[in-house]
Image 1 (cartoon, rainbow, N blue to C red):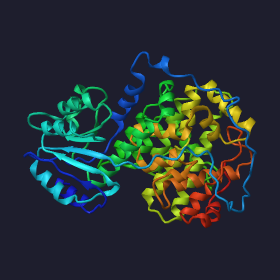
Image 2: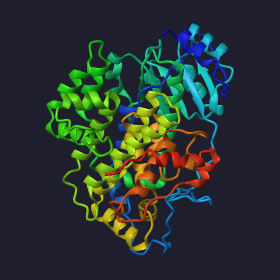
Image 3: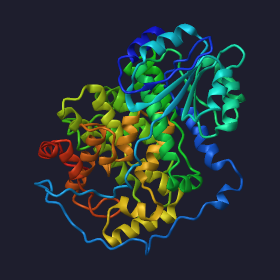
Image 4: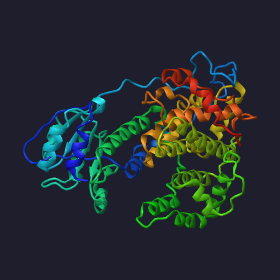
Length: 496
């Protein structure tokens, strides 16, 4: 797709306030795609690089006496509570701010198409254009910007040199660079964390989504509670190699699902997990599947990739010793939430791609618990005990102890891996969906509902022993979805 197509596609999106500065030359229009490398660098460098940082971080707060008594309540399974109620809601989000973005490129054709076509875009962003690195430095010295997007190759000052000039005076600015894959080696010359790199031929929708994801992740990771916890999370899982291999196979012109099954068959742990999933009570198959090829064919490509991701995260924490925490129960719960979220999304008429994303979001919604159990076993065990004693939800106990919950922590990790914003929001706010950005049924709705419904149907308490979580009825009523709950209940087979 040419830049002309990109600009023509974006010019139809309302809501941005566009401002232009020019001195002759060009513009940059960059679409943002992949946050993984730069956010991981930022994740490490911002909070763990200084040798004396760990000494300044307070130890986890004991929760033995920190939690107020809360009388246990239970919701009848055959009716949605009439009064609005929310479980473990985080503090109200701050009012949206106007984001200011500086685009830099030396191509005059791109600048003209971009300036002429972008009268308004969503979210009220203010966009300023600069036609050279020197002009961008000058403009950035006159007013603050939240993000800068630049081409790698420009005469006089390339993208890396420009960013090094900008970051000296504006260390908090988010940096995005458009470049070819073979140029990535040049990022080692950047001061501080590497900028977030972008593909050259990205469309307008990816631009908007990647900017939004970048801003949201920056907000999460600058939360004071998250910043206190991050230096203590020394055991962070890496993106599974098998996931990367399977993704590459599926993206290859000659890729085939049969080859995916062969890759999985080489990993005994992954093979066992895959067979466990397809033979679970949730799918209620009439015969047992024992061949990984049959398992992959049944699950399909997207669900297979998501299961690989979760299984590898679990495998890296098998040696975690956290009293009161049961990883296998969490595995079963995660798997069931993923499948039920997918079914709920289908019942709302969403397309197949979005339904598979609902599965991914549900499957990964509790990975933050693994991070806490693996990195803070003693502290997290206290949280589990406090939740049981006070008869409050796990999220309420976590927020009392840490100032945040497993949901937000998990979203930060998976954001570093580059998952779409819709999935990250479903993970971060599955206990408090009213904080989501969508005023309609979304991935967040599906995961929230699936999580609550599965806690309703269990015969024993959750892995923490706390009472089941409840519906955010105010959220459901605001979307006009309260009457859908009974339909969703009908989609729940016997949970494992």
